[in-house]
Image (spheres, rainbow, N blue to C red):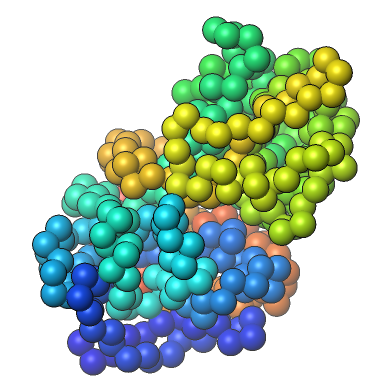
Length: 384
């Protein structure tokens, strides 16, 4: 291969450039991504909300092993893998954040990540686009398991699961919570009317109640509440304060899966360090580490996470083989590298996910079209 086309960002603008083709060193692996998705944290980096240094983004995707370095025996050229982007023991490896990510035709993976088992075999049964949902599904299921495990009355269940955020993880958590959780009601609290309308049009009734965030207190009423905060980092702190303030008498458990600012200190949860709550579960350990906040008779059990285990990714990949078609509507846009760069620039310029009268819930870029594993007929997604 003589070219390595990549979507590279320059001061907030994205462009397709030709980079040198990397060669693997000892213990390293070079991957050829099939399909890679643009997630909410990627969009925050493009918009300058996050200052992560990587010029090439992307950490959710399906890849082929293109080359292996000396000493690599656990993988061979042609193997199909997904990458666990979060190294639980090495903070210098966070794929697409502080090391270059998957929006390029060839990606070198550090020996420390290979040795830690962060390249997870996924087999041949998943189509390329659906495979980009492996990490979001694993993250979502971990968050829901943490909430289901947090009941203050042993053997009891929460009356309401409230999911705050109407991006991919928010929609995914509401669907999964309604299908597999112990909750009697699932409420998806949207941060925009466009997001609410898309979810209602897409899922219909589907055992999910849809409200705007400001209407969540009325929707919850006096029921006990387990809440998943799945918003971008610029909204997380305000929504945690909403849950601990207006909904404080109802909220018994809270899980933060989105990013939080470095100095995040909830006004209504004095003494709680949200960054520490998430960092305590880096890599998705089980049982999760909890922070319990108490004030008089009130108690809120807090969890969060940064990443999951490679074993959790393998479980999610296996589940998507049968469950993936139900999630097909989440992938709203599919395109090539140049189309991906163009759509990224348009979302940044418009400061919106609503482009050409369509909401971009999840953009999937076919990075190496020749490696593409066929997808089912696209009833809900658009090739652009």
